[in-house]
Length: 413
Image 1 (cartoon, helix red, strand yellow):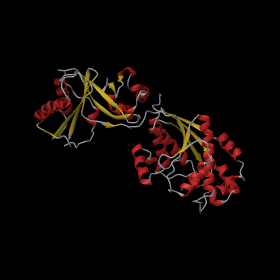
Image 2: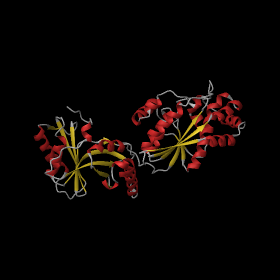
Image 3: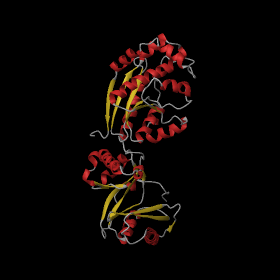
Image 4: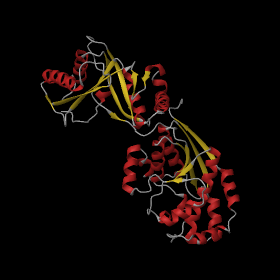
């Protein structure tokens, strides 16, 4: 027996529908929190529609994606592409869920017939029918509809109704002079549509934290430009290769990404030669922030993002975070500042970066790192140390030697 909530490959295949009533195979995708927007809701929906069309690229003609208020409907033309379509849609921020089913006439017999067809190859003992009647002109109420269609299913398959924990659920949506019937939902990415909330520059490493922090900002509709600092040739190529893999994966959520690769070893050497050992990591971070901010100004970004979590390592005490922050004029956002490591790794597993980040790599901050870093820094001491550095020249040197990588998804986007 198939367990409740278990999605199988049958979800992605067409049923052999009987054509007593018209049935058009469709994928219904429901909007997430943009349904709560007010007068500007239409603008959010238009942006989400554009993103859905971009994600599906060559798979679906633009004309096959319709709808607007609360849902989009994709008319399927080919069985072979349905699974790939759903896989692409999982990465589209702004979607609550993805459902494969049929479009039918507004007729109770059509609802029943579609439900029986959707369930005929499934093994189940309990059933629930859930109707949403957005079109109030349809004369039968939701409760009555649930009872009538549910009774037909129970009689046909010799099963019983269960409203709290059914093995299968049939969903009926009555809207826009048509109706949709489906039997399972794939969870969407949620959040706000990509590129709707401005732009940030994210300081990204190959570790667990900064990819998750970047993803959290992307989920809020923020376009994210990535900056990775490396200590080549004194460290291996591993961190660069892993960061490229991570950015390629995250690009599925925003379609286009830019990665700045910034050589940092010369800056670190200057800090080692001219400043006190305990302050090194903080001074590294302050220079990184300044360089990332220079990139942010170039990119017309509104802020910076880091993967710092309070108290996680020596440089991430509240005092050190404060003293790193005041090197910048733009806001520094820390989406996972309150997470413990396990909470962050749960998200890393969910979004697919965990397996990349778990591989060993050389962190540029560990290159020439002090044995006993300062955990509660004094800002006056930082100012005195930085007076020994030609900071504008170090920023210009890093900017001059940076390289840029471009990413896109789908490849034709």
